[in-house]
Image (cartoon, rainbow, N blue to C red; front, side):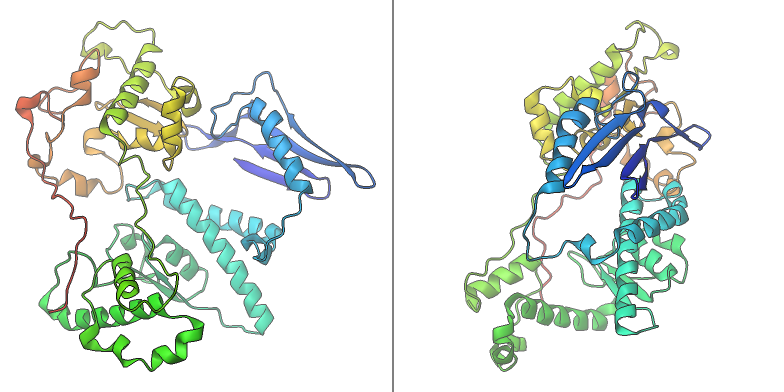
Length: 449
């Protein structure tokens, strides 16, 4: 989706772009719409939403909102936001920089780093992470540029990104001239793609990790520094800073607890020291990526969506492997219309909702550009050929397969499109093998000796 804004005329035009199989982008002309702000007289203004072809407009409920929503909800909200006065003692982040400059820098960086989406080796969604980090980088570059101008500095600021993850933000900022480094508890495959100018390091301290003997001295120093800093962050306030520095008991080495999760350290200090009145440790955030939903609920949604895709096709339910029913491709919005309100309510509380649940069940579905279709494992997907990171997955031992039942073997009217020898999933309980995955421990602790 491209947005073209003409501030002088008060017009914003939304141009939906779709990628062709050849990799080119074309405008979906029937879905072009425009928001206009018109000055009538004095303090009287008019706001309107116009569509180029409302009778041919196609909505998927996500990228292309319904015309009824544009007309009845968005228009009313725009009118409300334009007239209301919100009193807030805190500045919004975008008020700190020029929005026009931010839009220009964001588009330039997006164009510069868009190729990373095509070679993304991680299992995460590249479009989300790449463009999200591009947006953060654009904001920081403008903020730092304004800061240099205000202070009369010429040297670009340096930075450290703690918990850098894929390291893309570090890579972009470094490429744009800001020296810095990223630190995380584990290395990512994509780090090798950035080159030597992007400084990324693995922190030795981590939960349930083993270390080389040569790393023990460095580990001890990091562990002691971590405990000291963590405890200071948990109990320090401006009013008690002076008294805290004089309190030998707080920083005494013999009083330091073992290295545990952050919230546990905070809780222990609060319970024993009670230095801050009203301080409560942050509770552990609940996972909301559809992985903690009841399995019966997930299975029922998967089966319902699969039957919807299969029943929409005109193919006969009978046939052989050459006429295996692939079903049709439907937009997420169309699928959502066939789900009951209670199901949609549960999915709404999860990050990504229906899309995340379907992507989690990649054995059955493939979600691409807001559309869902049944995955056909005959099309080279079992070994994920011609995809980044393929070498790692092809080296998996045979024991890593057949640890789960094949969904198609059980539920698809034509069964699995692959025979038992080629399918990585078990065709029946007699083929099941024990999983190689180790069970996770809820609370892993690393204690000082």
